[in-house]
Amino acid sequence: MMNQETYVKIEDLKKRGWTNKEIAAETGFHPATIAKHLAADGPPVRRAVSDDSLVMNHHWQDRIDQLITKWPRLLGISVWYRLRPEGFDGGYSTVIA
Image 1 (cartoon, rainbow, N blue to C red):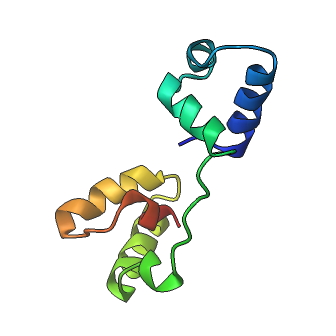
Image 2 (image 1 turned 120 degrees about the vertical axis):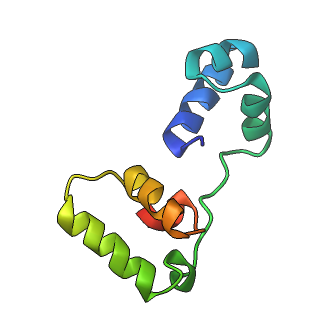
């Protein structure tokens, strides 16, 4: 997902006369994505997630806490991969929130 810093960069490159294809090659985004964000005057705003939906119930919050306590350096994606086989149907962004 494009962040605000990257958007400012593509906007600057566009003002300097770069084509969407050149900007895409520089930033790693598809030219259509560049065009879409420039037309919208910015990247999409990060969606707000209610506190109720961040962790579906106390069981999952407790399980996440257990994993992090046992392995403090465990990455969020690794926590998510461990929870999936246990029946967790939330997304990765739910785990890291």
